[in-house]
Image (cartoon, rainbow, N blue to C red):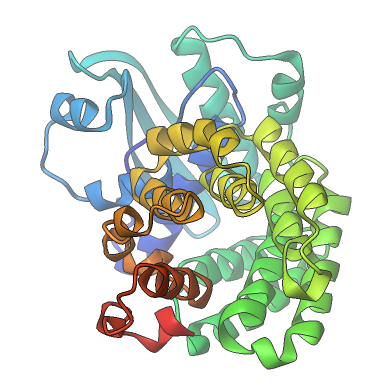
Length: 350
């Protein structure tokens, strides 16, 4: 699915269109018969002038979804077209309008319609999960999308926490916002305030468990719970974390984050060969993230020189202090201790 084009006449609505794109991708990912390219890979095509057949070939997909989004106050109009990728033959189109409170229902309806026109089987449990969605307070939704649109950095993380807290304060049953708040807390654990990891890990746990209490089918919340269990604060509970990542993949087989962490923990615990299938699946939905997994796998196979070919290729927005420590490990093990310049930023080195 290519990024939805904002037709609202207000560039301030661009983040809304981007997050709606991300949400529909996530809903499509809940249909296991579909392999859905992740947001990180499709966002570079925003406002691209490339023809659909060329994009389809570049991404190795059978079909491409294009669409526009127009928001006027608390009304949303979404026009979506489904094309056969290689031929650009129109398979289906729709133009739907929804109250903002029912935007999650609209996303589910679009995902199910696309699956139907693709002639793929939707399992009964998948149909049930996408058959309904809670109504959402428009103000809380705006806060949530504003927070999701923020970039990396300590100040942005703190602002995201403030916005997510405001969202769940307005709408206490807003499960995705609780999950996103948990993720923002996790970033404080690993990136910005590791010296206060116990405090932030406790806040993250509470937020993630609240998200799962409200919505037991929220795949990303299981990934976040697994990340918490596989951390110094929780003594690296490998088996429990792997179970959570596996469950997340049962709910969304195209979840790049679940594939990333499943592969990393498997490789980190010595099961490098068992991690290979996740690397293959990740390459299909998020090639950029797959580079990171390949670097880790080569490191754990003790193929240090080969791994050093991959660390510099990892996209800056995927770099972290944990990644930097493994990059440094590879340099040290390869006897290249004079090459710290490869890890240039404080963000990478931690």
